[in-house]
Image (cartoon, rainbow, N blue to C red; front, side):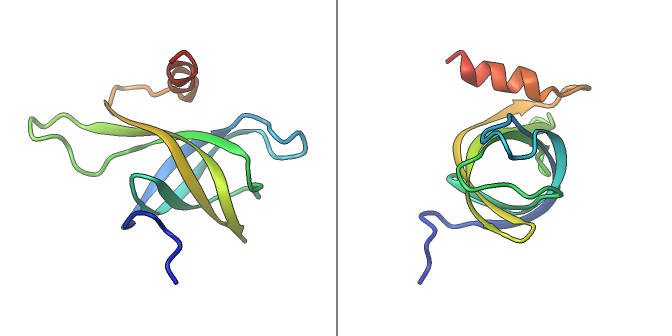
Length: 117
């Protein structure tokens, strides 16, 4: 039986994510991972660190297709770890936004935008 609420699309790409340190014994920091698939409500990724169910994450990845006007985009997201199986992490997405890509990206700037509203 399928547990997902939305269709996921197989898109293999690199992503960056940060782990804010909750729970206290979980890894904290910024990491590179591999996106396996994604929907509007969740994603499956490979993580270089062991994460725990319920742990918050925030990240971004360069979207593979530019807008019709040629502007490249970043997908920025926040979510919570829903399931863990070895290095495969299922994330329930709570917020996401497509933003024009700039020369330098900051997870901290992205997190502060969602924290403030």
